[in-house]
Image (cartoon, rainbow, N blue to C red):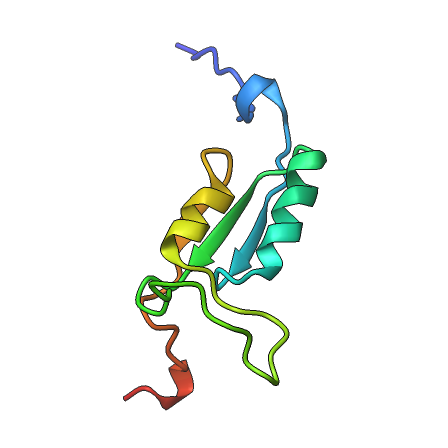
Amino acid sequence: MAMNRRKIYPTWPEGKPKVFTMSYDDGNDCDIRLVELMRKHHVKGTFNINSGVCPLEPMPYDAPKKWRRLTMKECIDLYGDDMEIAVHGMVHPTWDRMP
């Protein structure tokens, strides 16, 4: 007895055959402009933050750096309900220096 097999084509929401996503790390203030652009162009993304190094209060800029880490509240407010927040490790270890 031959079985009638259908070919299954997985799709994304609304039947879209492909998806475009973006992923960024570390939760710093460079994400502010990035999120503005992403929302303007209806692009979704995942923002990986380091839960153990988010400062409690906004920090000043470090001289050699051109950015600062966002607080956890700033991350939640910035990424809102339309972006995904993921954990990127607690303290952002350097893997080649770990035992």
